[in-house]
Length: 119
Image (cartoon, rainbow, N blue to C red; front, side, top):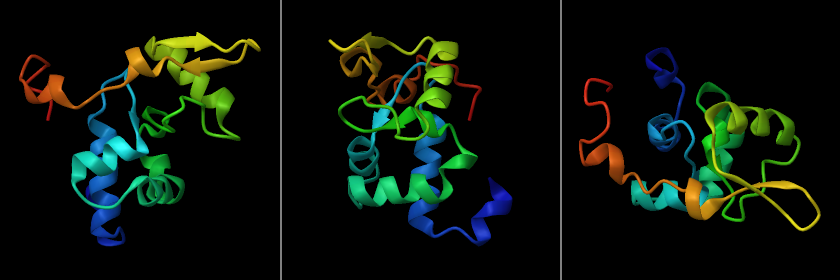
């Protein structure tokens, strides 16, 4: 990420740093990321992800309703299946994120019970 920082606005850089911290198999909503940072809101986070998210695990930052990013559903679902992210099926048989189980509050890593050598 170092090379990118010269052309990235500071807020965008912070959003992408949070996206990189989300463990495989877990997700945060746009609002969760804004809350974690203590600045901006879901729209700003969504805009950053739309513009710069390709550099990070973009599929781990999601809408609060668990609907995969329009236009990227198949790619996102491939990542979710590879990472064993909790999914559920809608009444119509569409896969959605199981937000109750997949949502990450940022706590596990902070508490030190994750791999501490990984920075």
